[in-house]
Image 1 (cartoon, rainbow, N blue to C red):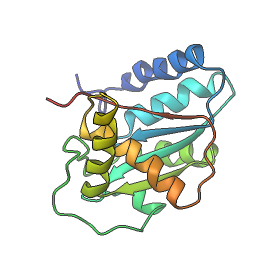
Image 2: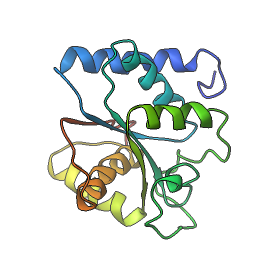
Image 3: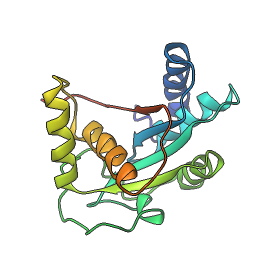
Length: 163
C-alpha cells in the first residue's frame, strides 16, 4: 500500500509527532521533505492533537518544487534532482498541505543539488548516514538561517537511508 493514496496513510505519520513530543519539551520548527505530502499532513495532525503546533517547513528539490516554489522562488530549476524519491507530479493533498503550513506560520524551501551535497557532507562529518531527501531538509535549515528566518528549537526529519 502506498501511504500517499491510502486514506489511512496520514494516520501512521501522526506517530512522528507523538514520538517527538515525548522526546523533547517543545519544538518550534520542523523541516519535512515533501513529495506527496502525506507525511507532512500526518505530522501536522499529530501535533494538532496537542494544540502546540511547531512551524512546519515543507522542503522540496529545485527539480520538482511544485509546492515549495509557492513560498520560495530563490532557486534555479534543475533538470534532475538528487532527492530522487521527491518526485510527485500532482498533489491531491495540496489544500491540506498548504493549510498545515499556513496554520503553523511555516513556509516552504526549494533546495538545489549543491545545497543537498553540502548538507550531506555536514552529516557525514558527524557520522550520520541518511538519504538525500533527509539532507535536503537539513539544507533547508541552512537556507532558512541564511535568509534571516529566526528558528527556535528545530527538528529535521532525516528520512530514509542512503545505500
